[in-house]
Length: 204
Figure 1: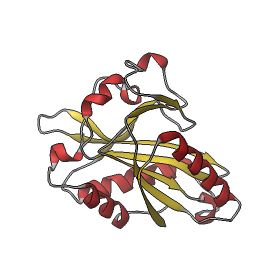
Figure 2: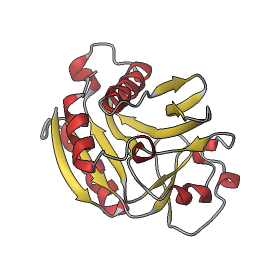
Figure 3: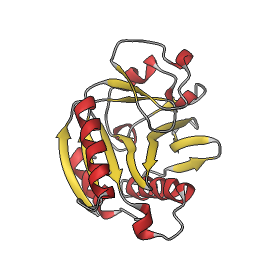
């Protein structure tokens, strides 16, 4: 898998470039790849988004074709867009298996920093148990698949302004919190996170 550091990206041009890359992969003109980047503060609405879950218009809102509901992107959050042809790696590609793989990638990455990420039945993303016993979301997953080629991907909170999540009901879940890596391990940098993501890629 080829990792490409994209640094800071405006949302709409990035989405257009991702769409073009997926088309190139489908045509056999480009290789599978993962983009590591940050976006300016914004909200995105997945295909299952409920308009009532948008509580504030303090940031731009983008309709996107990925699965899921509302989520926040912003500085201090590592976004990883995964573009890979599932038919190249399996004769019987399986979306559930692909989602499980993304979850496992996040869990193994967090374990590098002594953070125990966990799945929760009926809740998308990766969750941690806070010191006070509350459960909080630390990473989001939202994918789209076209011609069995994946795009969109994951977002891991390193040290974003968590108050910005207050403008939405994140992924439609209102009875749990949102946290970040630096709340649990303040010594982790974005470079550390990127290095762990590259080491812990599990593949399909």
